[in-house]
View 1: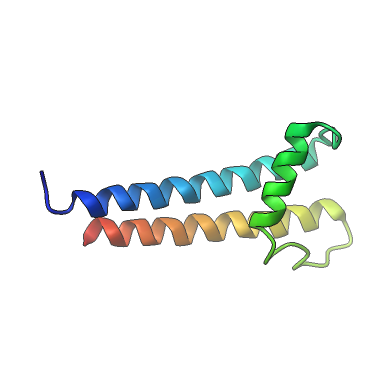
View 2: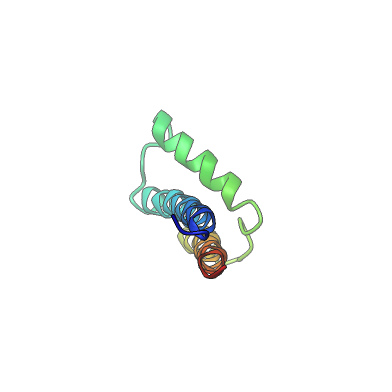
Length: 95
């Protein structure tokens, strides 16, 4: 067993968490663009989770079209989570 296995496992967990967060945000963008049924419990759950995850970037942009605000705001959050999460994970892999 390598002395780095704990760091590798922690890095994997961080990368997976970042991927799940980005997936939820991307799923909400897709549901919004496809006009998913807002009264559906699953759609509401995904929207609530995405809204919480993108709280800092929600309505950051002021495009006239609502779909552009959703794509830009939630998409930015997804990209940031992926970049930061994988950067941290890669750093942990090296140490």
